[in-house]
Structure formats: structure tokens, C-alpha cells
Image (cartoon, rainbow, N blue to C red; front, side, top):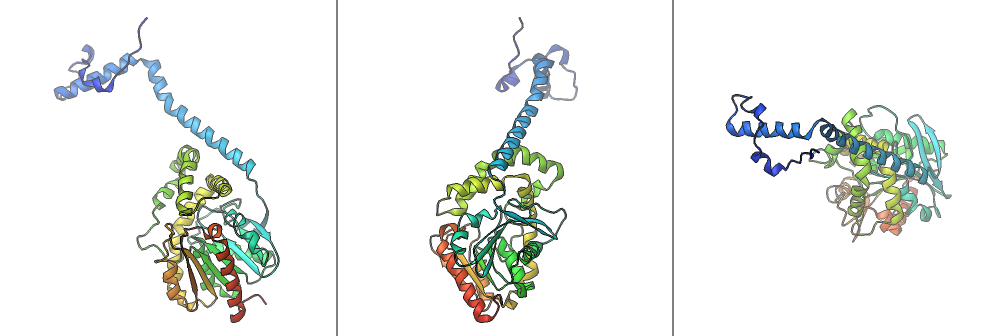
Length: 369
């Protein structure tokens, strides 16, 4: 029985060319002739059946990855259903959770986040003194994303404002974490009559001088119609949990990542909808900030900022520290030994900041009547 051909790539140049291919490609030098002849010999020796299997292997691998991705998505949807309710707005349906009585507080999560950023951290303690509502921003968590190119992220604030108005809230204290600080500052600049105060946690409030944020190139690939879909189902979804775990560790450092947040945060972020929404949000972040950052001196609503001294995601010097000098009467607390997630690692500081915002709103007459 004929034994199957096994080709050692290191021995490719030592294989003699087949007689039928020798000198069949004039113009090549001797080394080129030998290499081409050896390759043709290898293909002939492998045989058509084995060549077919070699061609099928990549397709089988892709199929396994897509099946694994679909399985993980199905499991996550069953394990993490929407925990609360939905409110309809002119910009789509928004998933929200609400708790407590008292002065209204609306909380907006940052990049790759969801309302679980607050529900699993400070929402319970805040609800002892305030009526607290946390929202899934459009396309994130369990909120669907309406179609279309929106240009800037300002429409997130408009959708949130419509949601809290429908739910009977007036002039809330608006809390924004990370990239949601851009949405909150847009409200403070353009619609100060609709909010009583702003609280920023590790906020992104100035456009990046270097242009796009560092991961923008990767997210831009997700927006490509065919390549993006291929990468989602063969790279991001099957292997994203490994990268997600590392990113969470980096984001929380120097503190530990809460196990329940690791489980829910990764599961909610690693889905096609939120990943594409994040690509859109990162792209619209700089235009949003460039449209308002020259007007920060006009802000008159109370502004309280909390930043971690060891925040490696959004270093405070070029962001919150700079904003402190631009907004008269604003207050900044620098939290030692704290990273990017103070609502988990410094919940008392967040509660203190919201209380202070309430006091300043009452003093300046911006609080809910």
C-alpha cells in the first residue's frame, strides 16, 4: 500500500524536482527551478484527497469558532436576562433600573459598560437617600441601538433626558462614569436647565490630543460590513473573555475585580450589538468633546469630580484636573490608591460626592423645585 507523503519544510530544498517539471519554467534561476519543482512534487505526492482536507481545515476551524460563539451567546442571554424594565423614547427603548425615594439621581455608565456598573456597586447605598435610576446607554447592556450615523454622542443625553422625564423625574443630579462624562458635560453646557448638578467619576472630558483613542483602529474593523462580522464571530466572541479579563484587571488596578462584576460585565459586553455600539461611541467621543470643551467656562450647574490617583485608563491630569481649572466653583477629589472604578472601590466617596452635589444645587437654586 502506498504510504502518504509527508513533507518536512526544512528539507524542501533537498527534494529533487520531478522529471516532468524539470526545466518547464524557463527564465527562473536554478534555485527557483528546484524550489518550484519541489513544491509541485509535494502537491502531486499529497494527492487530491489530502489537498481537499487541507482546504477544509480552515473552514472547519471557522465553523467551530462560530458554533462556540453562538453557544456562549445563548448561554449568556439565558443567564443574564434584563433585570428591570424598559422605557420608550424617541431614540429607542432604554433598559433601566430604579430604586429609592428622594431627590432624583440618574447614572450613566462608560465604555463597554452597563447599568450593572452601578447596580452592583453604589445603587443600593444611594437609594437610602435618593431616587436612583441607572440606564443602559443605547446599544449597551439590554438597550437596543437605533440605526444610523449620529455624528456625536450628545444624543445619548437627549435619550436619557426623555427617559427620566417620562418616569417623572425633574432636574436630576446626573452621574457619568468614564466616557459618559462627555454626555453629562454636553448636558451641562447645552441643557443646564434640565439638570440640577453633575457628578463625574473618572471622567473623559477633553478630546485626546493624539487623535483617536488607542483602540480605535481595532474597533474600526468591527464597523466593516464583512470583515467586522468575520472578526466578531471568529475572534472577539470566542477569545474576548480572555482579553476582557485582562482589561478588567487593568481597569480596576490597584484593586481587585469583584467576581460577580467580572462574570456579568464580560458577558454583557462581549456581544455583537454592544461591541459595534462601542465602536460607534468611541468614534463619536472626540467630536462630542470638541464641540463643547471651549464652552466649559460657561457651566454654572454644580460640578463634582472624583478621580483615582492611579487611574491608568483616564489619567486625571489632562482630564478632570484640567476641567477643575476651567469651571468656576467646581470641586475635585483625588482618591489615593484608586483606579478607574471608584463606585466599586470607593463607594463612600461616591455617596459623599452626590450628597455634596445636592447641597450645592440647593444653594444655587438649581435643585428640583
